[in-house]
Length: 395
Ligand code: 2PG
Ligand code: MG
Image (tube, rainbow, N blue to C red):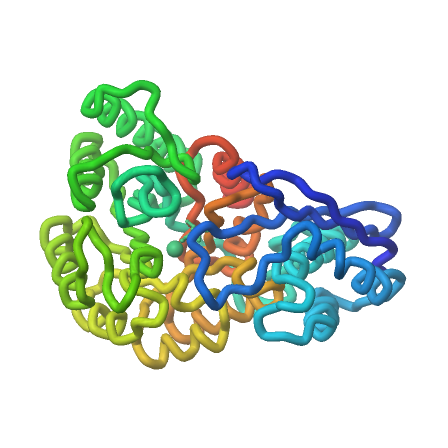
């Protein structure tokens, strides 16, 4: 496929910040991508370029890529990765590389009259067959850097297993979100309820446990087969060798005891993401030993890096992994990260970012790879677009 022309422009993301849109022209048609960004980004993530930085490298990219032909996405990604030449994408920017990779993939797919997910499956997941319905990770109560409240834990998620009738599950999830909202509005005597970055409720709580109790209570009352997950995002409250939790300093062992208490009290709590800081490998190792079948999920720990994922799997630090394409930079690397995770028996959860755009590419990655889960926020605002794409791709 020939790259006939390239362009970029600025759009705004869900947080009202500048985000990157990239366009690639092929066969006289433009194909676009929009790139989200993280609020609680891991320190090993690919570098995000600001608008002036993109401007400063665009000429080089344009000069090199315009008019060139590539036989597939892997070849194109390889080309742009060489142009950058760094591990953390510090020369061209991770958001620029992903923007190019995704726009190219869309052009390639359209040229072959295929969907984006079909081209990804054909190129990177040759052995994957059929469809496996994902678990939706819906962030309904927000804390940490995604909210303006007193919760240290960043995300309280409801986990809903979809099946051959995903519209029923999504409908139940929307109803659940509303019921929870009613309950919380009555409890807090507050209407309308404030919401956080991902459309989950953003309130003041007694402590970090109270939101788990609220979710467990509504699950019981509605009798829906939902489970609970937490994204602690513990790197965000780790400072000077300790975790600052509920206003006090906690050691790794203190935090582990808190999680052990939650596990005991809430059997529905089956998934725990980033329970410790991104460099606290011993913390992950210990909690994995006592996880009793629950998922221990890496995000800031692994940053969608195939080498890191392989290492964490080998050291038995995690049983699941968050996949965010913009943490690493290109779709080829993202698919390699998933393949590495699957080969090592890890479950993959394909995830949005704190600051999202209207682009729904994450759902195509999930469909291509038959991923275990999709993390897409609460069913509101721009996040609802991801739900609708799920319904389109998983009929
Ligand atoms: C996370 C994400 C998405 P952010 O930590 O898993 O929910 O947040 O994009 O801000 O890193
Ligand atoms: Mg996370």
